[in-house]
Amino acid sequence: MSSRTVIRGGLVVTASDEIHADVLIEDGRIAALAASGTPAAEAWTADRTIDATGKYVIPGGVDVHTHMELPFGGTSASDTFETGTRAAAWGGTTTIVDFAVQNVGHSLREGLDAWHAKAEGNCAIDYGFHMIVSDVNQETLKEMDLLVEEGVTSFKQFMAYPGVFYSDDGQILRAMQRSAENGGLIMMHAENGIAIDVLVEQALARGETDPRYHGEVRKALLEAEATHRAIKLAQVAGAPLYVVHVSAAEAVAELARARDEGLNVFGETCPQYLFLSTDNLAEPDFEGAKYVCSTPLRPKEHQARLWNGLRTNDLQVVSTDHCPFCFTGQKELGRGDFSKIPNGLPGVENRMDLLHQAVVDGHISRRRWIEIACATPARMFGLYPKKGTIAPGADADVVIYDPHAEQVMSADTHHMNVDYSAYEGKRTTGRVETVLSRGEPVITEREYTGHAGHGVYTPRSTCQYLN
Image 1 (cartoon, rainbow, N blue to C red):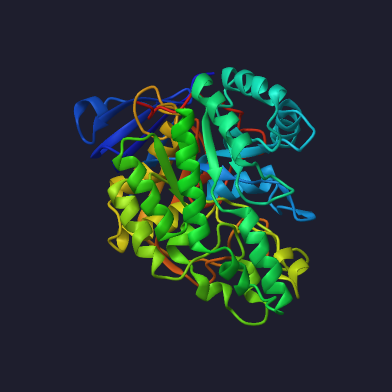
Image 2 (image 1 turned 30 degrees about the vertical axis):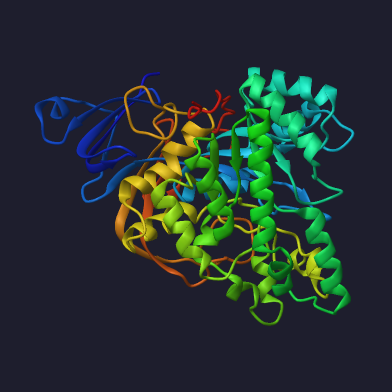
């Protein structure tokens, strides 16, 4: 059955343009745009008409760093693919790329199949997968080639978490060499985990057990050192590199230097590093545990360098690293020992609104908002122009966004399956009103009208930025 939707009267904002235009959607895709009020637009007929007068019409957000149902630290992330993708839709995100995990001693395929089983039939929006590579060996390297061919085109490695996800420099180099050949993109958690473990042990021996010490032992210099090392290893391998959740000014400087040298090096940051700080980690009565994530929150002065990096394109993407753990019963595992607090923050629902607040505050432009939250993540991970833009042929992943509505972020009103908000009480201007995923209404005038199983697995091509 054919269906047609027309969105009338809004300001269409993409990474490249702002235009007052009507949008015609046919059978789940963008069919045409025409200037509002013109005969071409007026001639369109549709089954459904959405009035976007006074609103923005933007591409659905693309969040390329989420962890639904991730086992970590003896527990699991509290959002399932069902609850997490529903919350994402509430926040104007219509595509996530989550991380399938290879466990040591097991194959990539086993990990990928396990994540397919978790997600299939449960997602409200479309999804893809990256692959966490924890065990580099000859079989793993061969499997990387096969995964790239079938649309899993990015592989995450960890310089942190010895004994869990950690890879040494030799393993990293081998994986990078392989990705240089097969077109894959290595994503790096850049922190010197071996050194951090020493500092953790020393802090605990001194009786420094509170959440704030999580930030103090995971030093910015150790993020910068690992970032530098990852860049040099990628340079040796002739491979591109994408550094995830960049939090420190010193790490941004390493990325900027590499990019100035013409290297294919890219950086992502997250809203928590732009809006939160070590002040949150230091909140009394163990409240700081709510803000434990890795890389950790930094002192406020790092924020200006991150914003500047987003303006100058030394950082290209803002993702959430959404990995929620409830305060009660999960974060509390680390009472008396900060190293046992599960690492991760909820945020998949907040990203688009926080970045719109950054537009209101003058940190970035409207088009840059869409660039770092929709278009660039889609290009970086081989989803563009199917995702990340509003143009003929693109999937009709469209958000009607009210730039004037005010809201207060709170655990009482969010839809993530977690008992606190990292942004509790924060007032923001701008709010999602209606969300279409492949032309189907998932949020309709602030009501959830989607369903589990609408979202489909989306294979990806390789990174579209490589020169």
